[in-house]
Amino acid sequence: MFSNECFALMGSMSWMGWLMPLTITLLLGLGIASLIKYLVSSNHSHREDRS
Image 1: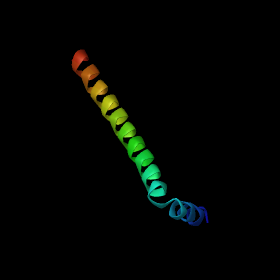
Image 2: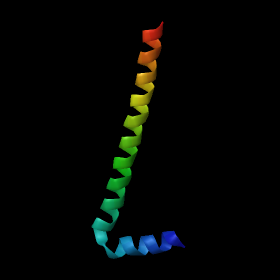
Image 3: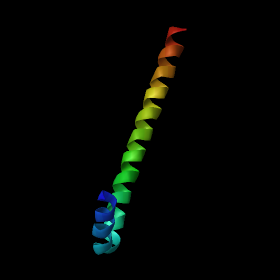
């Protein structure tokens, strides 16, 4: 039900309606990926310091 309303709104906004959600999704994905990479690398560096 929500997806139908979302697609209708995106269709009425032409290419901007598709570009903005895709950009936001991409930025969120990159942010989460960099956060995970930072956490993993910080855990490895702490383990190397202890041993």
